[in-house]
Length: 274
Image (cartoon, rainbow, N blue to C red):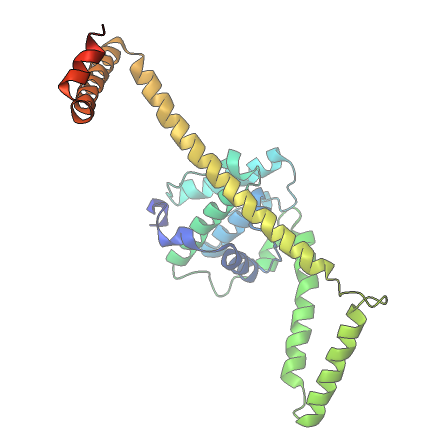
């Protein structure tokens, strides 16, 4: 079961782009970042897609912006986990903060679970219709519908385009040249692509956030280990044992180093100086 997979499992090596495309194609959404799913509504609908009718969608809030509203969504998700006897622990306090790494790991687990149950989603599942019952579901459907027609029109144009050989190629080249000229500034300077630059900057920021989260987790791990050692050393019996063993090891090490480095006369000189 996906609830028992380890952190080194292949499920946790799925990239952000694959996770986003899976969410958007499954639920007909247009998320641009994984951390946008921190509200818990997406996870609830993914479970509804795998187990139709198990999730009370009227309790899910797709318009959750405050932490207490997000917590209500995760309560609904936890109830579903309890009904299905899923032992996966949901770290709500970390997820609602919108950290990219925490949300990415949880969505990686969600994808692994959804793929392991009945081979994926139900074919007859209609995410738009199911989302109508949610709070803020209609607004989410409107946002997703506004993106879909442009892609459909582009696909229909490519499918229905006439095949006239050179004439179509020349027309396409002329349209491309016109678009390039329009994109260039009137002053004759270099072309500016603010959208591309903005996307690149956002990607760099996301990668930096992921690296910071990873470093913070590693720091907390080693700090916890050091804290355990400190608590252990505070015990009198363990403390005396550690002091005696460390004194013996240091004495043995210093004796070996002196025997290897200095002759006997030098050793006596350091022990009994004149």
